Length: 251
Ligand SMILES: [Zn+2]
Image (cartoon, rainbow, N blue to C red; front, side, top):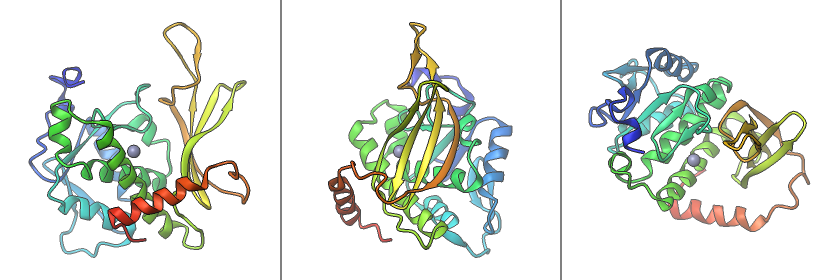
């Protein structure tokens, strides 16, 4: 994967410059900034890295607070913004990329939720950028990062839906629509779920591939009706709560 990106300008971002760098086309970088600046706390780029627009401004809300913490975190990461890719659903942990073709299909809040997930996921893996460059990221790294990313989302959702129970429960394939050739993947946060709808893609053999979620059509929040997911193993939620305690994440 390293060689795939050799000479690609998105790799020529200096990850040592600051803490959360953003690389990619100017249009994507501008679109990214516009989306994360839809709240009160404003950010800007300084040499490709995210910083508070006004260092003296109050950092308000869960999104800005978590992003600001990530910026101050000594762990350095770069979000490599790429155009719509059929190989990526929202982002690719193992490639360091963020699929702006997908990301821009979400509302501002869903965009921010995705940013928090991606940033936290990468920052939670020690030496993420070094391992990425050396092609040494493992599944264990992914699991640690992904869990931390989900917990970051929970904190964000708690603020967005204060009256709902928003503990992470499960993520899974949700619905296949063989007629419309779409599939949905769902992240269930107890009372609210984030649904990612994608379209079937043609596989190399010419058949429709119902397992590739790479081309996102849209993201949406939907309230979970009691009893909707009775079939899911409740043990999984308990296991996740245990992880939360081990990671010492408060919410
Ligand atoms: Zn993840």
